[in-house]
Length: 75
Image (cartoon, rainbow, N blue to C red; front, top):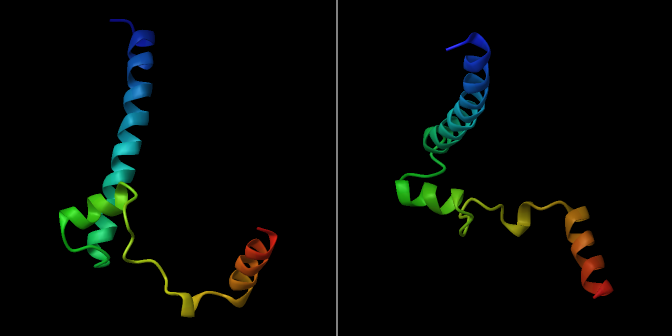
């Protein structure tokens, strides 16, 4: 096998490896920061299901609420 052939094999493997390691780091941080406590919670957040960590309305900026009112009036 020529070194040029190895280069074309290693580049996609490197890209895939970087995505896998980044995903593993994100999942590890979810558990480390106690954002999730079970595997099912992590899968629900990753898959886009209901997010129980969403900030409540009392912590939103007034500008965000004003933007929501403008959107409501425009409808």
